[in-house]
Length: 590
Image (cartoon, rainbow, N blue to C red):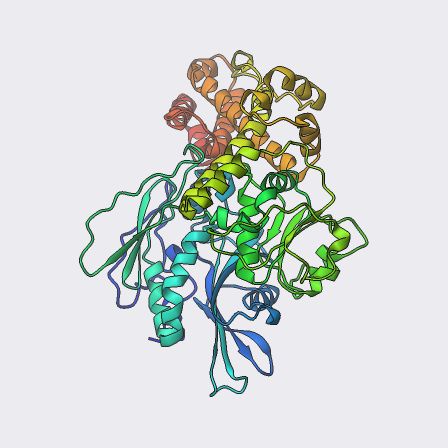
């Protein structure tokens, strides 16, 4: 069946069954009678799949968008076109995998967005979807072909998704793309049909995802997981005809391999990322630039990096002028670039990481000093970090020695990455725990919550008050590192990462206050109250309770609270005259 034919059957929101496939078990949105439609399951994982080819007259062009009803604006298509191909100077012969990130032009709602939002709530903060951005996961092939005018076959298969599951989609593409290049569209249609039978991406569950003859087994982390731990996937018996791949992670990159070219500066780079400083990664290929940018963003985990980051950025990007202008200070963003043109365009940026070819983890660079920015003239400059930044913290020599020893003893790269990830995690936690402790003190006491008054407000964040707490309860309690921690905090409090972190914490705490207020209200005898007050006051109470019931789905209230609230509403309405009962029962119903 052709791609066009398949979509004529399905339609944009059709209800036809998947062609030639067993009926998928029905899945329903909690609290609603909404069954999943064809392509809903696919949409939970991917927005669309694109094939980008090279046309001698048009240049890069989107040849296929699948499913055909997937909406992409002209601006989004242009971005996908240019970001799906390496720059000509990269010389990427053979197969190359990388990833990019681009702005969404307009907001779109899926037919079952409420269920996806529920999944998003249970994810760790750094894996939550960003409503303003898409990821593009690319498998690019360039091979000699004398039958073509250009002499080369050049094509990219691109998975466009909201999900930052970098490692997972890298594996999926590595499995389907080589075969797609041999078998073309029918194979792509079959692969997408497989994806449309996948279970929902529920955090905390072990998922079995069949794709073209193999089963990929993954577990999506939850916000309740202990940071730095990976749950071991149990291997279940598979039929002899199926190959099962168990992925230990869905999102993590090979941290040690990515940081190897700038090995001696890892702590300074952690500070620059934490503070949201403008950073450029200049690399020889998109795979190296994208891996390095993603490694940088992940080094402050479990803190979320709140500024923009572009694993692969080109001169054709729609934000090129915005990010390279000299009329204002460089923005808080991390860019990964490969075009030599950027060596001149971005030479006014304060921090530049220049990496050569990423070597195998068995080779370690000699110690190099931080280089001065004026020495960075071209992309051919020596690898290193070019900046005038002075780190706030003294360098931790122990982690350097530990990793060097690992190289000498031929410790596996995976083990080196685990050591490095744990080091970054402990450093970030030492930094953030004093902030968490202080922000928790801004929460009003539970005894101040009255069911008959509005929930109390959080106390405002006072910078000087926080600084005073560091003397006795600062990072020195959990970190042996010396240095100007106070200066680092003062700088961080002005950064986009602090702003994003505090806004998220304030929202969480406000919701917690509202949940406690709701629980206090449910513990009152509301029917007795209504009998002591006028009908007007009782009706007003019912309407307010119904509003709280509608908003309560998003609150972290104790189990059973919403049911208790509904019981209160029902009992109050039943005690009112019949004419009012009919009106109030209908009010608030959707």
